Amino acid sequence: MVYLFLADGFEIIEALAPVDMLRRAKLCVKTVGVTGKLVTSSCGVAVEADIEASDFSYDNVEAIILPGGSDGVINLEKNSFVQSVIDRAMDEDALICAICAAPSILGNKGLLKNIKATSYPSYMKYLDGAELSDEFVIRDGRFITARGAGVSVEFGLEIVKALAGEEEAERIGKAIQCK
Image 1: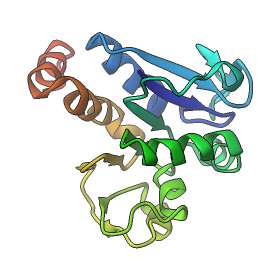
Image 2: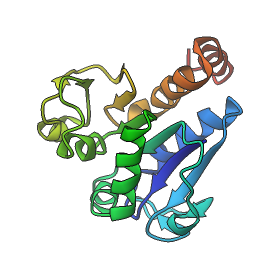
Image 3: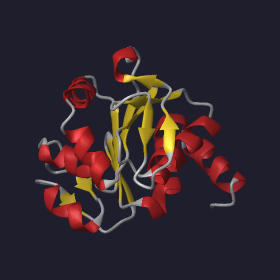
Image 4: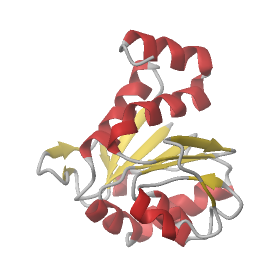
């Protein structure tokens, strides 16, 4: 199971484009509302999460995804539930994915030391100990990081590639006229 965490202020394309790519690959993905079932994006669009934090179970977690949006990232980072899920993902070797400002959460936890990573340019300073890169989407081991909204589809396809294989990611990319 893949879980994408939504907090008020999240960047809508950074959250929903990866969900779309994963569902096209027929991967099980659920959005988790950490600030409630109805979560408001940075542009004011309300999205109903599949589940709330209280309904979350850490059974069979393959990957977690943290979308950006500066207010959303603040709300994710200060949430003890999200912090505990990140810790558990680390303990259980799950794939950990973050885009735009969200890699800063991982950097602030010291998880990116010696990991090639990227983020929105003004958040690179928070990627403590990472090998900083200007690439748009990077996978280094169990971490996938990406620069921002403009590469949300590629970010989603990289997650598909990690979980379902390169052939499936290429199939979806071609089907949506992306690659």
